Image 1 (cartoon, rainbow, N blue to C red):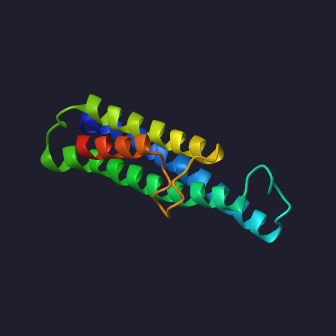
Image 2: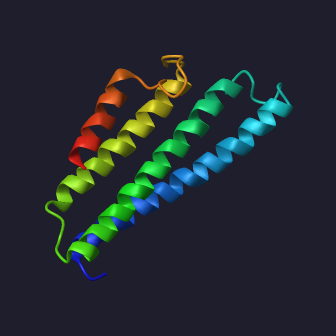
Length: 133
């Protein structure tokens, strides 16, 4: 890597790939639960798996785009980004928010609205992470 701050992109892409894997496994599991409703229906209902699956898609795409931006911006501008620490803070906020959202879904705490199921503190974290960018 030509610039030191491009190393930030590595962690974003790594997190995006992990979430992509979780999304694929969640999709396969959701398909199996849909076809065979007695499989895991009591422990992990279809609607919860579906929420995790669709929200994982949104978050891994965001992380991938942020990672690509953190890689390309220093390359194109020919200078380091202003604060790699803020980029790492943004990643931590997004990952903690994702884990918190999944945890709240598993405990049955969700808004019940399509793509807006996250608790308020997760939505606030997403806003802060977007403003950091």
